[in-house]
Length: 420
Image 1 (cartoon, rainbow, N blue to C red):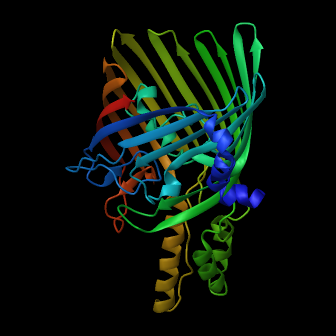
Image 2: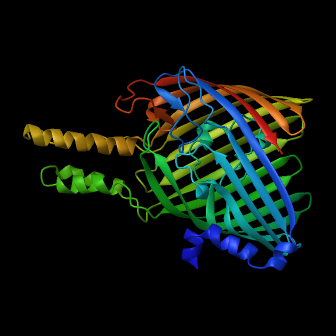
Image 3: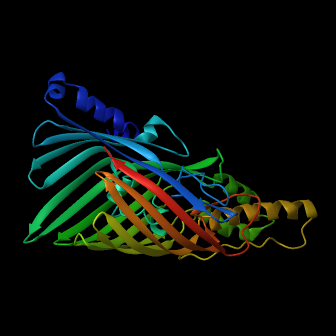
């Protein structure tokens, strides 16, 4: 059963949902959708701006991009009874690997045995951050996209498994406690506009608590990820073969191992919204035993004010690595062909381990105009300061050229968000 849940969750959910024609006949249906049509401009000629690390294309100087944020989502919800519900959500957008399976964001059944307690089985949004379950619904957020310093690393859009949520009424407040467990996977591009990628398969488990009280929402999440895939094998093999002439190479081998290694998220966030003023912030600490997943801290804060159908906001954030740079030194005095080989392998190892680092900060302003029912037009201007040792949220236009100086980028975004 666990193998089916891990590999074929969508098929299992469809079988459960449609196995009985009587059940299908009794369903109450609701269809809805959302869309974002966006355009991003970036004045940096060396680095392409992308929404998150799953994208292999983006905006750079003299080349605006519609791929960063444009998408269309369709959602179906079925209701059998007060106890049973189901939902399917498909999102069409630019992906590194664009398949029907990857386009299915949700496909789950919800069971509510008693009021205030829900169990979901299938494919669900990974509730790891404040915006996790609706970060693709542009209309539901004030910005053109989720804050880049923070959500640029958030490649975990969904998982296949189970979650359980219990609600507690505490006077005027509502406390939600959710536990989740499942499997997910993602393939990440290794460069700009490349078809080459590296795939991670992983299991995750976690606990989320959130407290809603009047205008306030407070939240804490802990999630642990166990990597199932074996990355870095080729480099490990090369280093192992050279340990007789390069003994220090053995020190880098553990950092290139991924299978059965773990990393975890510890996240806190809050939101205040009295319908005129709003404030939202999140902080996450990522601790990693996986050399190919960098330790780091990520933070953003944003505040805004609504005036009629207009909204104005400011935002800022940072991403800071917590691990040291990897520097490998090859032995001196070796024959030229061997020395050249060692230097190539050392450079490849450094690129693999240092290339995952993220070090930047940003600030920006924006406005939102709700000019019609369920339609919003947004304009956002951001300034990014990117350290030369932490460019992983961006794509190097020329993968053969190293970034030797700190970079600046001004990103202008225009989006139209729609619900239907």
